[in-house]
Length: 416
Image (cartoon, rainbow, N blue to C red; front, side):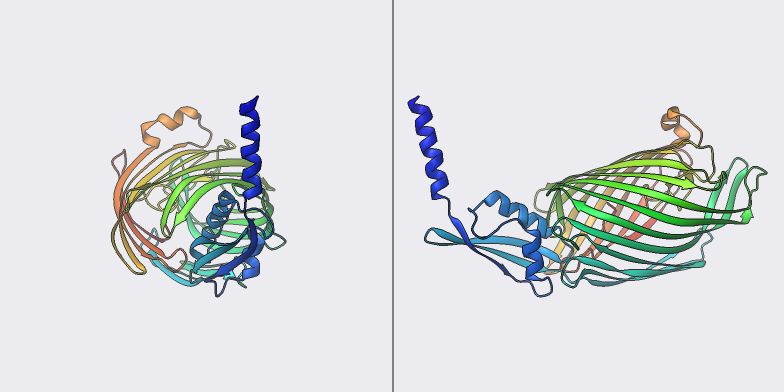
């Protein structure tokens, strides 16, 4: 009984001695509005000092595109305490230019301009223009904290045209593919770890045959009006230290697509990315992503899961196959070879492994050797520490599985 009384006295004295926050101060921000930082952080004046809650706020700030780094200090004043957030900002108005070749070795490029911290309130706005045999462009707006510190909205428009391979039983056909889409998403953050996106997309798909194999069962011209309901759930326990990343993240993407054309049938698709980052010493960062996905098993050459350089397997080629299910593992080790002020040069070694279910096939397709792709490789990263997501990457993957190829994959941002 005495022990219980002593414990209660100790707890009560601890609560009584907890310092009260007299003021929350934000320093170092020039573009990001102080009112916005106060809006999304949980620490409040008049409340007891809670270092766990303050640390959570710091992690939240470092996830923002406009913040390169953040830390806090406590300044005691008698029985009260000031909490001082100090932030280092990113430069967030980013033009970009990518140059690449098409499957016919024709010159292609993409130009883009995005603001990632619009109005100093973490609003993303911008667009792109692409010339890849045909013209494409898109406009995107995303404001995750537009309404309050939990709710926002995203609006997307795209008019995208490309030369798309379609895989038939007797060979490959090339179709001119156009996707004209309008999307609206509601964004909601339940708490620090959990958020969702829920919305609607109306789009028109248009396929026109250009060359290659043909089939009497596959039309040479297709046009379908489609409606898509999208649901995304993210669990995020990732922490940043500049370009280093550590922690676990899971992203579930579920979509129902309704079509008015039986040649492009309605389907359900769902996939989950499990992503794990680990700091290794002062210079190393190990990253792993496992994607598990399934879709309605329609027997169609227009299956939703694509095997592609830029999506899942580095070195495999541009959209070389399609399926109604996917299991993909990407793992890589990033090591800082040189760092000076704002510039970082990283080396990268990776292994990409994936398997697909054939349209109309069964789960046994995942273990068939002809569906398995194994691609180890090497790469480099050129990183600017103070400009958001300015990571220029070059990877070279070498296939060691059946019907393997190899090649370079170049892009902006880490692969995952």
